[in-house]
Amino acid sequence: MTAIIDAIESVVSLESYRDQVLGWAPEIASRNPGAHGVFFGYDFHLTNDGPRLIEINTNAGGALLLLHVASAQQACCHEVENFVTGRVNTSDLERTFVDMFRNELQAQSPGKQLRRVAVVDENPTEQYLSPEFTLFQQMFERHDVDAIVAGPDVFTLENGQLEVDGQAVDLVYNRLTDFYLQSSVCAVLNRAYRDGAAVITPSPHTHGLYANKRNLTVLCDADRLRELGVDSETIATLVHGVPGTELVSAANSDALWSKRKQLFFKPNWGFGSRGTYKGSKLTRKTWESILGANYIAQELVPPSERLIIRDGNEQCLKLDVRCYTYKGVLQLLGARMYRGQTTNFRTDGGGLAAVFMAPEISA
Image 1: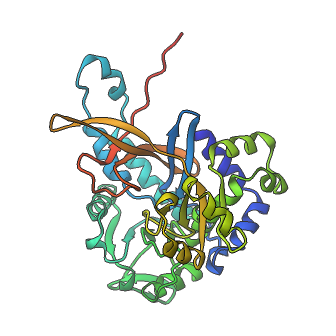
Image 2: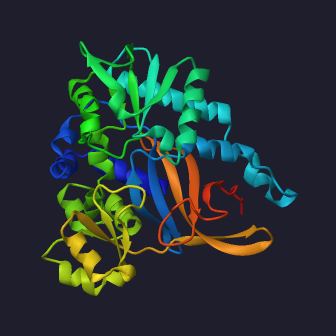
C-alpha cells in the first residue's frame, strides 16, 4: 500500500500530470495556496494479488475515532500479545496531528501562530461522524489551540480576515463534501480561499489533484503515464495497484453496458458511496441517468472478508483498509467493515475497526 501511495505522490509532483487533471477540475482548483491537505485517506481492497486502490479521499473522516479504538485494544491471549503491544501511542499521534495543522498554516502563512481552528461541515451536529468533531475540539484545546465546530454559513470576511462571531479564524479544517465550495452557503469560504484570508485544508486544489475520481483514469493507464514522463517502475506499481478505470461517455456506453457486471460506477466528485452502483445491479433507467452525468467505470475488485463472532454467532463482514497519510507519509491504519454493496456504517458488528500490523518474523 505504501508503495502505491509513494508512486501516486511522485506522479502528482509532475507538472504534466497537474496540468492535465486540473484542466478538468473546476477553475477554483487551479489556485495553489501552498497547504498540502490534512487526513488523506487511501482506500484499498485486499486481494490475493496484493492491495488494489479503490479511491483517494482528501477529507477522510474517522481518524480520531480510530485512534481511540486502537488505544482501547487489549490482547485476549498470549498468542496475540505482539499484535497489540505495538499499538500507537495516543498522545504522540495527537501531537503529530496538531503539528500537521500547524505545518499547514506555515505553508501558506509563514511565521503565523495557530490560535483558532474552525472544524467545518454542513449542519455539523446532524452529521453521522459529529462525535468526532467534538474529539477534534478537545484535541486542539489540549494543545492550547481554540477550536469551534461550525457550518459554512456562519463565517464573515472583514478587512481580509475570516471570522466567526467577530473572532478571527486562522485555519479551517474542511470536512465539507462541497469540494470546490460552489454552493451559496460556501460563498464566504470561497472568497476567503481565493483571497488567502485563511488556510482551508483540505482545499479545492488538493481535491483536484488527488480525489477527483476521473484522475484514476490516468493513474491506471500505462500509455498515458508514459506520455506524462513517469518512469517505468512507478508505472508498473500503479498499473498493478490501481484497477482499470475509464470515463463513461456516449462513445463507450455500449461496451460498458455489455461488461457492466465486471464494473463499478462512481460519480467523479462523489463521496461516501453516494451515487455509486455495482454494475450487476444496474437498471436501464439508472444507466441512462449515469450517461447524463459525470461518471467513471472502475474494474470491480471484490473486497476481502473478516470472520467475526457477534452474540455467539459467526458472520463474515466485507472490509476495506484506509491509510491515513500526510504528505504521503502513513500516519494511521483503519478498516471499515460492512455488509451489502458499499460501506454504510449500519451493519451490526461493523463500522470502524483498528488495524494492526503483524510483527516481522525472522527466518
